[in-house]
Image 1: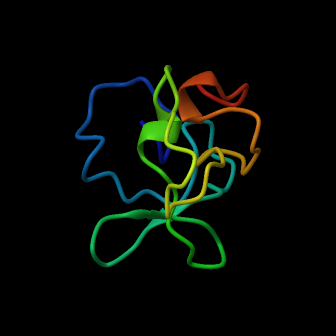
Image 2 (image 1 turned 60 degrees about the vertical axis):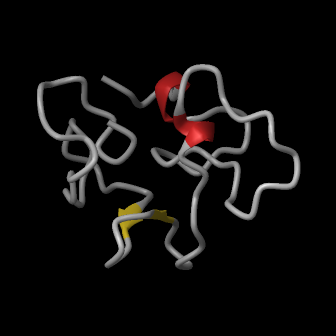
Length: 82
């Protein structure tokens, strides 16, 4: 899940939990429209969170991990993931 970084069965597109799978506070949250956003309210790139990442250099969404905020990887490669 790009929000809680959990691998347990749940609807990852509707997850709105405010902490990671291990109980630590989550970096990102869902906007009222359901988009992943960072603490400042900036939209995060969904493709960046996938294992293959995003190859679009001029994407309007930020390329940072939804789990920890690092620009070096997405949620699927985050060291905080379950």
